[in-house]
Amino acid sequence: MAQAKNRLDEALREARRDDAKRAAGYRAQALKLYPWVCGKCAREFTHSNLQLLEVHHKNGNHDDNPADGSNWELLCTYCHEHEHSKLKDMAGRTDTGGDLPASTHNPFADLKARLDAKNKP
Ligand SMILES: [Zn+2]
Ligand SMILES: [Zn+2]
Image 1 (cartoon, rainbow, N blue to C red):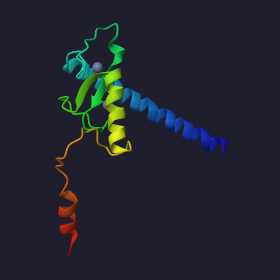
Image 2: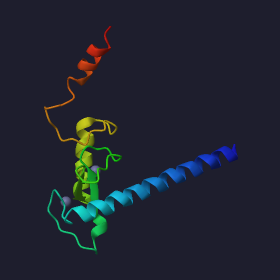
Image 3: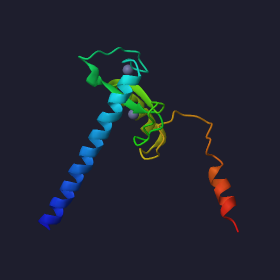
Image 4: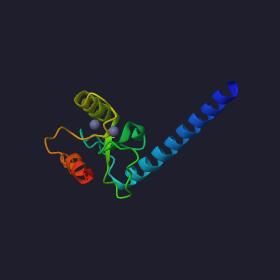
């Protein structure tokens, strides 16, 4: 079984490497697109503390990285952390795919109903 485990470790390592590469990619892009200011507390950043400025995905989907930056928001690490703990409290789970603030408007509210209707014979 040692070999199987090694393969799994290797696969995990590769996945993590890809993740890191991708994250570095969109972070660099976001930092080129936007001023180095936290979107919440307006704290400004320079090269010396830039590692505290993080890229937040507005829709919560880290795979959603449009080149125009429309899904990104630069947040300082504190506000970013806060943003996520807030969302977790609200959703009660982390895998909703929703990084969205509380809102009564849900554009997909009737989507399931519409799909169900379509699937009826
Ligand atoms: Zn902040
Ligand atoms: Zn985030």
